[in-house]
Length: 566
Image (cartoon, rainbow, N blue to C red; front, side):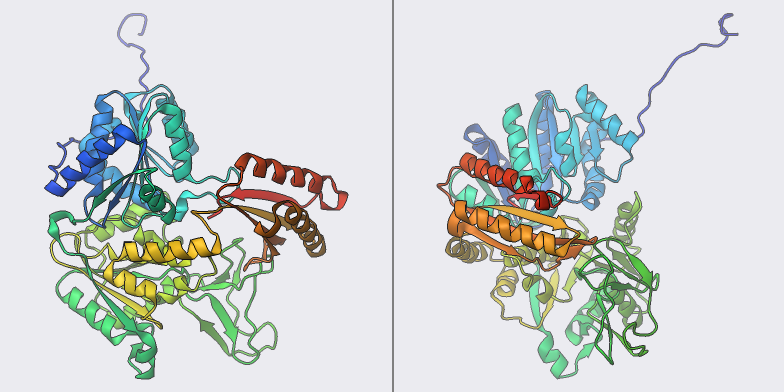
């Protein structure tokens, strides 16, 4: 039939991901966005990197779209980096309205086949891959004519890859990539990283400030709630203070939505025996097991080990087991008792495991099928919900008391970002922060949204204690199954490095989680002063490393180097 001309053979190649729909014209910018756009273009004339510091809901994405359009008109590619896969789902729909099928998406939730397709489209500069939206791994795509890299929410820790190697920071790597392609980089954030803001102040980066919210909506009103006082007066209901319950009731009555933030998943992080005080520990890691009620199991968040929930203590046999602390699961169950008529949803690693897990929850919340959304830090990343009027942070102290030199900076960023989800469209939103210490300087700065004050205080501390941005840091991690061997290796390495770098070596120390997957861990930090040659530092570290690995006893120890480990 084919020979007789009845049938005809032909091949059609279709992509796995296609956009079908009508594209709209770009939104008209308000005067403040117009000024910001002009300032960015002016900064790009003299600087390759610029920092756009726009407060939450100031319409940074709209400014980006105009820059993207200009770059596409010049026939170049754009890389749009995002910290979290959850964010890409919302941004894809927004950008597809303007740019249609010119967008390609690249992140780890996509299958290998889908990623290979994007790779090939980028390699051959096809029209389908003019704008690449992706997480940090999209830096390694084979770009041929890159014109602009946008790093949105540039302060986010998710941009840093800790394990496995290569250990890189996507923001810093993007600046190097742009230099290779002679492209421009725009860093955007409402709460920039101290290093980026310091570089902008020093004149290394261009700096643009956007301080008006879209539609001139006021920044949310922040209320600090002293839960120590509430406990004393017996005004707490579970983990909710009477003030927060009242605010949620008011929001629900007005048919508005609520976001509650608790940066811990599971039901409770510790299960403890009331008789002997023993808590079940992970057999491979140095951490207690977290109780997950929906599967009735104890789970390790480091190695994934899990076991059925215990009904009696493994040490003394007592049946009096008590849970300590609380996670998102427990909050969700408490909400069902407190607000039986409200629909609640949860957004954490457990509920977003599938490929479309994020889309499903974000879609339901946007469609107002969920009244109260409980979540971990995923909620803080630039999501845009128009009907949210109240944001509640259930316990601010966890973040503030973290053993890390950036704990205060991170807490400020996280709380301001979560607060920024409230009151984005019409009226002013409200934020309620529960804390045992509401007079803490960081909480006071969050309540007044005073980034400059936080920056100044943190910078003084960093200078005094010799931390970034003034000093660079190199972290060396040693891991081995044999406790004595790794301890001896760490002591030897510490002494050798101290001979070279003197007082700039910290350690060897035991990290807060000293054993993961049956490997004991030791850490050594090397601080690199501003005037010290980086090339010489690198050579010296490699020299010590080679001697270390030549010692027979130390050869099996895993040795990893992480530069700028924060």
